[in-house]
Length: 488
Image 1 (spheres, rainbow, N blue to C red):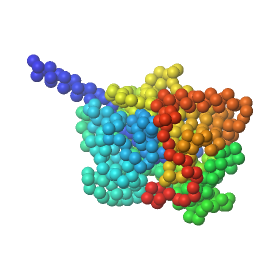
Image 2 (tube, helix red, strand yellow):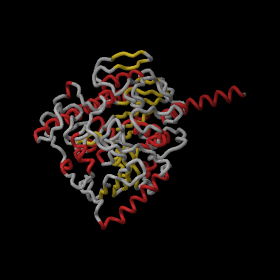
Image 3 (cartoon, one colour):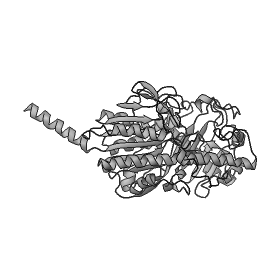
Image 4 (cartoon, one colour):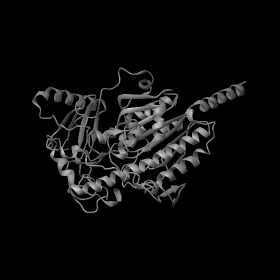
């Protein structure tokens, strides 16, 4: 009798495993939403990514809580802000003891795998906890002929990164037993610098003129450090990730270097769209499409000339905004666009709920499953952003900011407890979404500033940050030297 009961329980468990959805999680690096057709790009055609949005959910206001690769990726995995998961820069490993949503899925019967750029631990290409299969490389990887760690053997795999990582993932997928749910994570290098399209996309945008954004020249009311950044590694007159060979160069004709950089960036995105097409076709052929949650997102935003800056790290919207698209009939059977603000720290809880797995033991985020299905009148109306000054990239101060549905307040702590030495910023996002006019010195807005400062304090306290726990380095000011070539 006991054996019969045990058999029934095992059979029921297997049935539940079969019914649970698979997860295909596609993560891009430094992807701006407006580099995708479904987010309004006039020039970059991404029909396969757009199709996911047209059949699922497109989050119109999705943001990272720290605009830097490693901290943001750790927040996606854990559901926590950087000060809690501990990955506050690009050189720190994801803690072995820190739960992650793929790890929780693994503990609940999922087969899990990671392929591609992991970017937590620059010099480590070894397997990480929570994954049955883990295939990555050291550092940033290269667009062509990256050296991978394949089962403990390091070898250069010839070819274009986006194609190779898709091949690796699809080879693994083809070997999965359909009786057990799987979670496959694909970490693209694209479109991270140095932007190198594959040959067929090298010249697609040659005829598209790309001027510096208007805000690059609207700096009179901005903090002085933004103007100081113009001629550095992270400014529009600097080397532009080596697209400009002689720098600084503020001549009008030097905008051509900027244009070439943007063309290269766009070109890498086209290959990602091709990858999505291949993955989708396989899901359709194997009849797993509608039982697979497909997530397509970026880890952080990217400044492309706005306010005279390139790269990320700041609290300005181009640095914060990320694309987030989810296709799954479990979530919605009709196309939806969600306008509410969602964050990287929401992903872990959301994925686990969709998969019927336990929630993270601790989270700073909130599952958006009910928001998508039914709407949520209690959804957040504001959140806080933080970034810590890096000595390896001394072009951005410490940043603490609050973004509500209509306003943004940014300030720059020095790191030693003394009053801020940089001017703060205040933006009316409803009337000035491009953040062109800094209102911080408007006397009539003093009550609004007081309100936003209080909200920033409240939100940070709720996440465990106060004057004692909010540790940050000393702001050493904007410097002109280039970063070490090994970490670019």
